[in-house]
Amino acid sequence: MTSSDLWDEQTAQGYDNTSAEMFAPHVLNPTVDFLAQLAGTGAALEFAIGTGRVAIPLSAKGVSVSGIEFSQPMVDQLRRKVPVAEDLPVVIGDMAKTTVPGRFSLVYVVYNSIGNLRTQDEQVECFRNAARHLSPGGRFVVELWVPGIRRYPPGQSAVPFEVTDRHVGFDTYDMVTQQGTSHHYRRRDDGSASYGSSQGPGVVSVWGVLSVLRIGQGWELWHERDSGDLSGAEA
Image 1 (spheres, rainbow, N blue to C red):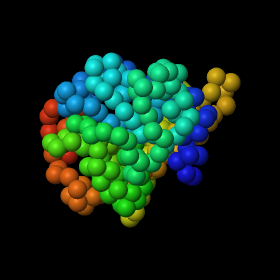
Image 2: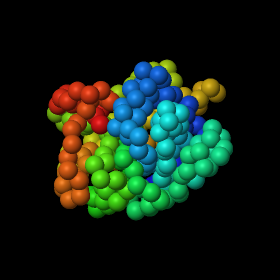
Image 3: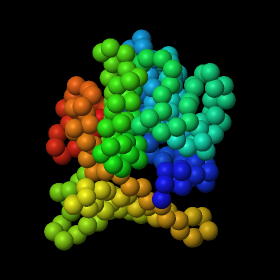
Image 4: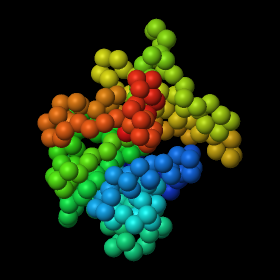
């Protein structure tokens, strides 16, 4: 499956609903506040901007935000919320290679979107692309999941992360290739079920970071405290 297959028209139309928990104020507000503080008086660039979950409220805080997005259907959904392109400009393209005009005090990618880059080469190019866009002293912020390898019992390769009457989700992880896959089964109103999955690397290439950027600090879930080794997600 290619990225264009995954983020198609059907997926884009239902994206905000299936990701509703990520729009909750207790999740979104700390994210936006954190990024606004880092951006300061400068501009921000979001890789994989999607439907604008983070970019729109960040822009509402007075930060000048631009975006790069691979999927036209996802941008179409964003444009339903922000019809005027000049208010939130987005370039269609690969976040590992596509460039936009200007320099930014902050480049960021959230909600595990870095996992769409599945090879080390793509990861390295993404970090290089971030460096190309950053002004001196700027920061590249990446939010990603921390694989819960310790939750896997011996001989078991799958661990559930949510089980409700509407959704069953579980992760599988290949210890050899370090590739993780999230599986989602969702019950529709008519009783039928849909299945979707997303894949990504379990680790972001440290060599990719070292090749172009100075490593900063890891924060736990958008709070300014060091991420411990038990964190489920970090920035």
